[in-house]
Length: 159
Image (tube, rainbow, N blue to C red):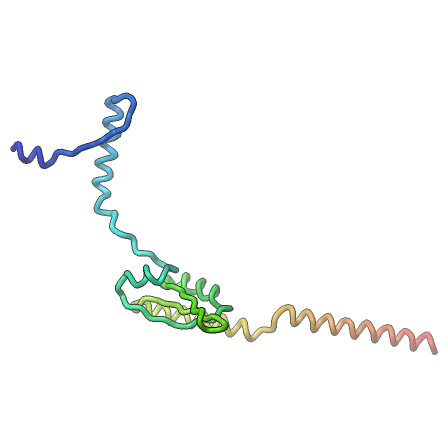
């Protein structure tokens, strides 16, 4: 019986100016709460964007693909939407630099869907002309019409 009690003995250190029953009660409650949550403190698995090292620690196999510099941000948004765990590594050896996107092997279906949407967005963006190009075209058009009006007015006055 004595050995059982000794095995269950716990050392509890409290910093307080005056030891009262309420301080002791709150300290014991905090200790019991910490013991209850002890099993739940398993290491958290990161999700979404993470480092290559963290992704490799998960031991689920990794695959990679290349993404250009211009499209890296839009890829991140699509990957986040599909809940893909990925890591981005910049390859500086090539000029212009390219990005390698690493992802888990089990995320292959999700990454396929994400890349389908990503390429559709990219192609849609490439298909439409830029706003600056359209603006320049319309300003040139307006300039030409203004000069035509001036020429017509001069012709009317000379007649």
